[in-house]
Structure formats: C-alpha cells, structure tokens
Image 1 (tube, helix red, strand yellow):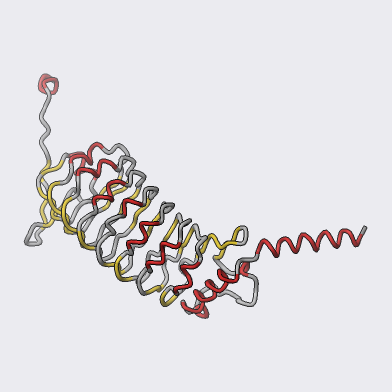
Image 2 (spheres, one colour):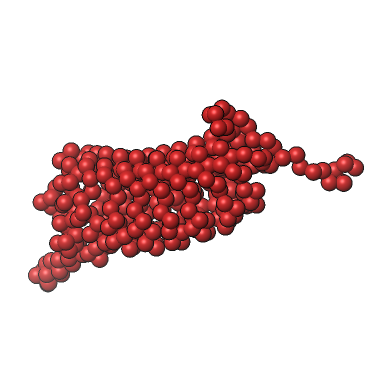
Amino acid sequence: MKSLATLFLAFVFSLNIFADTVSDKEKDALIKLYHATNGSQWKIKWDLSLSVSTWYGVYAENGKVISLNLADNNLQGELPAEFFELVNLVTVDLHKNNLKGQLSNSISNFKELRVLNVSGNQLSGAIPGSICDLKNLKDLELFKNNISGELPQEIGKLNRLEILCLFDNQIAGVLPSSLYKISTLKILLLNNNRLSGAVSSDISNLNILQNLSLFNNSLGGEIPKELEKMPNLSEMNLSYNKFTGSVSKNLTLLDALNMTMLDENGKLFLLDVNQERKTESDIVN
C-alpha cells in the first residue's frame, strides 16, 4: 500500500513537471530576452538553471508562455528578435524600464495579445503598421517614450481596443480617419505630442468614450460640437492647441484648463463660450 502511495505521488509530481514545461523555442526566447536586456542587473533576476516556472514575471499555461510582467525591473537595451517568437503571449507588461530601439514589425506575431504596456521606456521610431494586425488587443500603452512618426493609418483595425495611451511622445501628423471607427474605445490619451489638423465630427462614433485628452498638440479648426452628445465622456482636456471658434459652457467646464488655446504667435487665449439662445419659457420665468 505504501509503495502504491509513493507511485501515486511520483505520478502527480511528474504531471506537475510536465505542466510546467514550455517548448525549447520559448525557453530560448526568454533566455535571449534575459541576456539582451542585461538580466544580471535586473532587480529580480532569473536563475536560468531552474525551471521556467520559477522565473519572475513569467506565466505559462498548458506549456505555453502567456504572460510576461517585468515592469520596473531595470531591463536595459533592445528587445531581441527572439522575443517576438513568444507567439502565445496574451499580456506583456514591460513598463518603467530602460528599453531602447524601435518596436519591431514582428510584433504582429502576437496574435493572441490583449495587453501591451511598454510605457515609461526610451523606445523611438514610429509605431509599426503591423501592430494593427493584433485583432485581440484591448489595451495599448506606449506613453512616455520617444516615439515619433505618424499614427498608423489602419489603426481602426484594432476594433476591440478599449485603452489607447500614447501621451508624452513626439507623434506627429493628423489623426487617421480610421481611429474614429474604434467604437470600443473608453480611454484615448494623445496629449503632449505633435499632432496637427482637425478633429473630425466622426469622434461621436466613440460613443462609450470616458476620457479624452488631446492637450498640448497643434490641433486646429473648430472643436466638434458632437463632443457634447457623448454621454459617457467625464474627463476631457483639449487645451493648449490651436482650436478656433467657440464652445459651449458645458464643454468648457469639462476641460481642465477651460479651453485655453495658443494663437499663431504662441500667446494664450480662451475660446469664446457660446451664448445659448433662451427659450420663450426662460424669458417668461
């Protein structure tokens, strides 16, 4: 009976070992990531002689690496090409490190990815157009980097995206028309960039948007009146742009700086507030 129990425990242990195993390809990709980002200087290091299951921030399921959370862990350098071979990743959180270089076009390999957060690094170059192939992406956070170029024209293909945070970069150009097709967006933060052009009235398509920040760009034209009709919009900042015309009092109150704009000479001014026409009942009262 004792030997039977021993055999049973050995069997259970072997199942656990098997469940913990990831493919040699994925293990090698993780090791390449470790060395490429100066793993010996990480705050919490990996012991490469131990099982992948013991490695900090790595989560595997059914023998596949599905999550990598190495936020604020002193990763330095560039992401190696092998990193993009971790094709089963659902969540990647590498924010607040010292990663450099550009996001590779190979990011399109992450077909299962739902969350990508590489904010607070030193990434540069343009956002690769291939990122638009990540059809399952819900949360894209690239803020506080040195990203430049323009937004991908096909960004609207990210039709499950709920959070888009790209603030504190050097992104230029106009807002792509496809952006207004992402009806799932709840948070859109593009402030502190170099965006120009107008904001389309099609922004009303983002009917569940809760937080909109376009603060400190070079956007112009009139502020779309459709913003007033967005029932879930509770936070908004459009100030320090080059918008002209007038806005409603409601929109002014919603903006943190009451629609403070910059004229062509760089001087501050407040947008005019619409004087709503009084109804006959208002006059009587």
